[in-house]
Image (cartoon, rainbow, N blue to C red; front, side, top):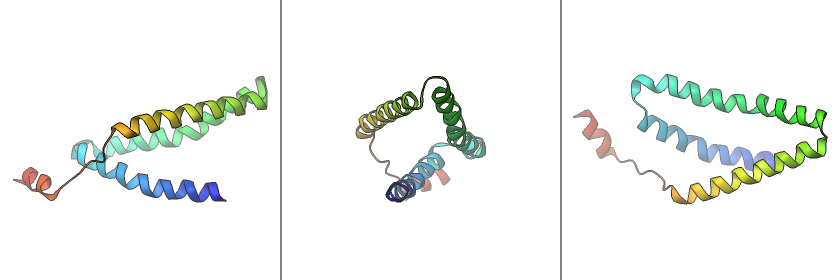
Length: 102
């Protein structure tokens, strides 16, 4: 239950920022295509992960599947922490949007 709360909280904090950056950086003509690709990649994660880890659990062992998942999760967390410290939050001002309209 606590994990679901933490995950939901983080998604609520991260998704608006990602959407804002995408809306600012992607040209209006490509917004639908870009959003579709981002959503496709996000939605494909679960079924692809199930195929990979369930196959590994059936072929090798469930313990090996869990160890691989834990190792990949740790690597992903490490990469996100290292990359996240180098990326500053984007600062958008109204003057940017005013200069684009002119």
